[in-house]
Image 1 (cartoon, rainbow, N blue to C red):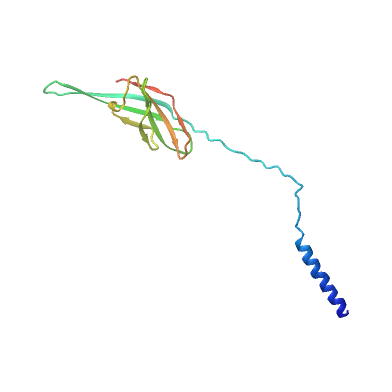
Image 2 (cartoon, one colour):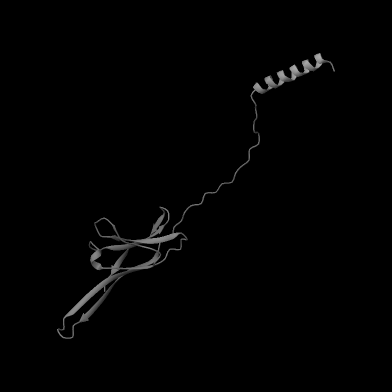
Length: 147
């Protein structure tokens, strides 16, 4: 091969690389593939069998015969069946007044409170399941049973 032929081949290849490199690449995708996506919903179970019982104890002084009555309210429930339950919030719903939180507990199924901590007339109690997220579920409201 002659020197002239080699030089022309080298010039031709160099030009092809320079021109070919400046042309933009073009590619299209013609196949579509369906993707199955499912999104789960969070269902939080509320506590069930909520009860609020007033427990009264009367003691009589044997010397003075003076009777003293003390009481406490026992609020109990069946725990939520939700797997991510972190605790419970006990809420008081007084008639004609805004609801307020009475107690927040961990993974227990009962709480004792003083009757004086329950404000308002004809108050009802509800218990709310708490999770590590903002999802909650409240029980039905129940009356406080007297002694």
